[in-house]
Image 1 (tube, rainbow, N blue to C red):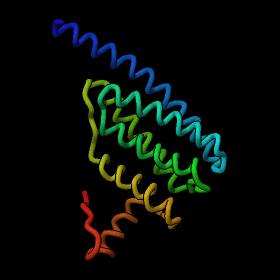
Image 2: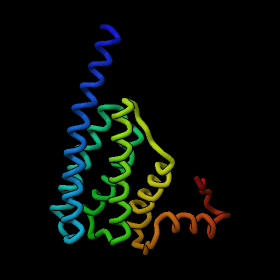
Image 3: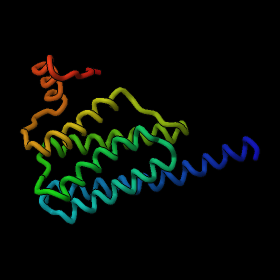
Image 4: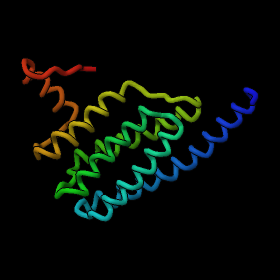
Length: 166
């Protein structure tokens, strides 16, 4: 196979991926909008989980592993929602919506460059989503600003916990 054929195949794959991922993201936004007004709707939460799972698989197929990690963390949150009485408050909902917006931005840049592109928001986004899923949803602690809350945890528990501030 020539290099030209490989380039054409990659462009075709990226073109197909772009259409598919944009469709899935559009559906995720629609479902999030509905979920915001019906946060106790388990069927809607399950639908969001399935859409996130589909997007994660599509992203994995093109090898954008860091971007896939963001979706995986959001998927974990909806998995917990589906298997508990937990609901998303406004602050958590905003974090998830902004995380989807970030994924959309990263995907657009990555498809245009035909390689994964992430920015400085990546690590804080992952940390915040992990915090929401692992600590917030299990302990039921209140959250006002997830990133500030993470930083305040690092400051108040400095002797026992090590945090890398990015």
